[in-house]
Image (tube, rainbow, N blue to C red; front, side):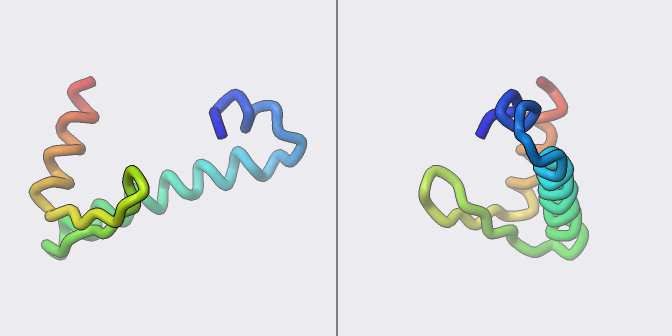
Length: 65
């Protein structure tokens, strides 16, 4: 589902749900870094285990864009 699809959705809660999921993902990354624990995610149809260092790298790359 694209951002445009969400904008055109009949249910206004859909956009709020996406925002809530984004906040939850950000919080999970922050907690994993804070507690020095890995974060398990689903990426490209595979389960991926990210170390706190990998999470920091991804965050730095995202901010650099």
